[in-house]
Length: 432
Image (cartoon, helix red, strand yellow):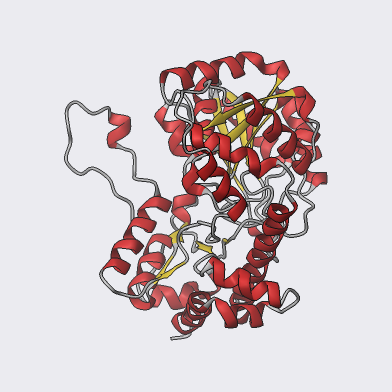
């Protein structure tokens, strides 16, 4: 599933030779190639929100197609201001103490922050596939903090402090922590009480928090609270348009940096000036519309989020039916089930690792998923990341408008045939 150079090349840096193609993009390319060949594939491997671009934003892009000048590396001033206010209000913290930078997707901004801020990275596991490789690219060490499903895969203050102390004893320099809530790959949200305890540890050890809140508006109960509310002086927040507005291809992200950390702000701008210069001007001008609290767009965001909740709950219930316990999903569009209950049965088929499980599932059922190893888990853990967004977004929105109170079963049966079929095949696979 991972693509890696197999032939040594003398003029390529060793860290690049050892870098895999991003697993999420690799599985998406693989699925597209299979589909292009006319074969069926059920795509639970890639987290791309499937809804159409809202007409208001389409019109805004058309109206600004003539914008062809370079913009400031920090981004269009009006966009920075309105986006900062929108996200800080939506995510529950005071934006007055922050400055914003607009970048080509939050992924690039996360990398730039890691590059600018010295020190080793504290990383809860499982975690999104790109955090650790980004650290590797700048030769920072990754200090993994294991989490367990019994605690909803949440990092705890005790685990964080133990990891910091152990790293220091080993001669490492833990200086930054990435927190991702709502979480990819788990679809779960870090509760405020736990955030408060984590912040105490971060203050004690002077740890910078990089809070990836790209799914902050794909929060099923609208109760997600940013860690920036509890730790405003030491939290950098990243977000963007890709998830709640299905605008991944727009490649527009935002980073909010405390005014107390202007050296970091200036560092990111220097990196931007020597790399990506600025985000596409038409995209920036059009994106202003996304933050104007337009009632049509806000209704659209709520509808899309509710649909994600219905589909994710359906997948969760299907897992429960085959004997795999999982918490109710809270945000984003992922689940990260552990198939440990089937270990003996899978071993009889020669399956001992998550990679083997993902490959066998793809070959035998045409279900694409991602193994736990892609998210930093040990190979022997029988965990897969399942993305619950293989459905037609326009069809789903049309049905939801007419049936806003329907059950997950009714909704998926009516307009998400690939999700329904994937769950049926999962059951058949594990009960062969």
